[in-house]
Length: 425
Image 1 (tube, rainbow, N blue to C red):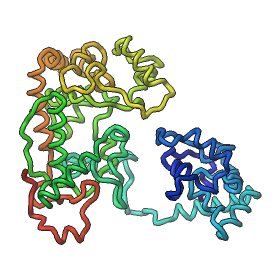
Image 2: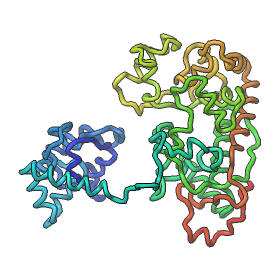
Image 3: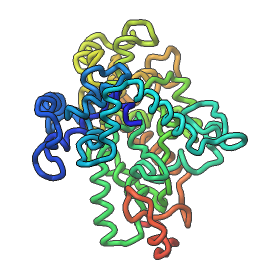
Image 4: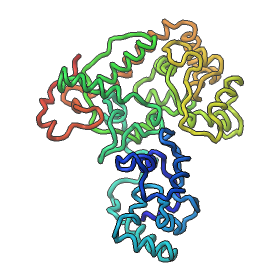
């Protein structure tokens, strides 16, 4: 099976530990070929971008052959778990590595048998499971999300790390390399647990942190309703499909907001104003810079000077995880510059610019109003934030109050918990 690594790629973050500090030795993995080590260090510097991709197989990276095994014999396995097959002393895997290296037909035969065996691992058949209408989303989530209390509410699910039961929402496209500051929430939770054990939920901490960050950046203040409880799972698929896409048209944006109960035009326009600060990845911007709606040209609503600036920051074949400021004028200040930028064709992502550039849109007057009157924008933003914070929160005995915002409480800790206490700062 591991011979599938005869092609494909891995991120530098999975390689660098064995290049610089193998098993805490402050030295490289001694099984790595010295020449290959130098090549890998050139691609993956010690403090470089961990998301850069490296070929599993440096000789024929896009061909499915048996070169992977020859690489292992030469100390050129990319990741530690691959090289272990040959470099572990007296391992029973060594003869197979040697056989597959010298006989491609034997490898192909073994690989086909293993793939068939893996494909038969407890498959759902008959009436088990379902046939999805959208491969990325469970049918029930598409057809009856309003009957669920999971993917829409404010239950701090985004703070959960990946577990055996679910994948973290932090890996979802809208969040990966964009949603940050989780270590700050961790420190807040630690201090609060010392002062008020099992009392303040991660959901309330996150809501308060959002409010405080707005205030500290020059934005409005408001009283945050409290009493939320924390959810018991993360929703990776929901984060990918339920959050508004940066490529949405205005109609799609309105439908997405209305779907979760934010059905006022002012909700959409005011909450979008949060992009007065923050950043987005180039991969969410480049389509409108080079091939907008498959036209092989840029989005015509982009100001030409701003287009040149964005293309310099996000070249067509550049690193997609590079981040660009939502607001190029006052990127770290919460103000109403975002709306002025839209009026000047300087919205970073398509879904933002749609608020002003869609002909005869009912959002245009609000963009103009918020651009010219910051106080009106602040008031509308506060109202919309309170409405959004009340979207299906868990309260009472629903969910739990996590002891660690990244992990659902263990059964033992829940049994020892009163679990009737609600967050109430």
